[in-house]
Image (cartoon, rainbow, N blue to C red; front, side, top):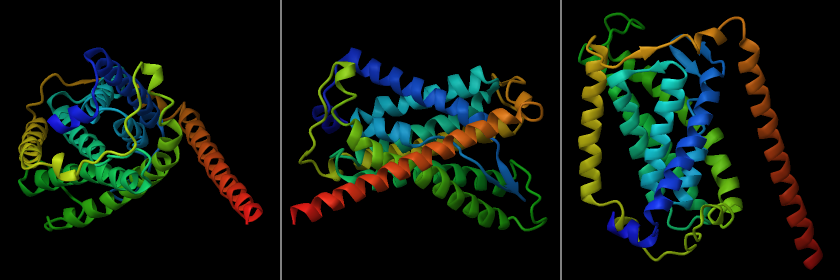
Length: 294
């Protein structure tokens, strides 16, 4: 923590601005993903869990701790309380898992312009979040906290289904809405978004090893917090949930207003096609310039 503070020096007001920016952007994006329709094939659900590239880009450009905390709080406020789907004590699990995932992903980026570091951070960040969630879900079934009827009498089947779900999330959330946008947008935003918050961009080349960030203390903290998240989810599943609140804001989109969700899908599809087209055009122009230079 000391090394990261020395590298990315921020004042208290700048830390608050980073926190609010992350909370607002990710919270609003979660409201969009909440109303997007999902497709289910048996017990497997195909949907967008969240736009991973938003906190990943911010964690690469700013201090990852305040980005991670802001994104997790934004998820609870916007997608939980405002959308009428607050899970009470069960929200602790998601808060801990997502905060740890984005924080570790941000620590892996020493150079915001290094695409290899960005790619590793994106996949590791989403992977940590989904892996911890998978472990908790498997634990609920194995310890008998939650019932599971996919294959009666065969609790090992939860491992297979959770494994398929993990791969599904890594492809959709990790690659399509995490890796690709992060690689494309981070270099373009570097040096442009920081002055808007009154701060200088990070140094593009920092001579600091990953070992200075990923310490034994951090690993121990991850293990302890994962255990806390698991216990909180177990309590929520055993009819001892506290501060649970649910409204009908999301349910209203199920039948009469499906067009809102499908419209959002269409907008996302157009956006993805536009980004791919611009990327291909840029590569073509670079190739033409190189040919002319030769």
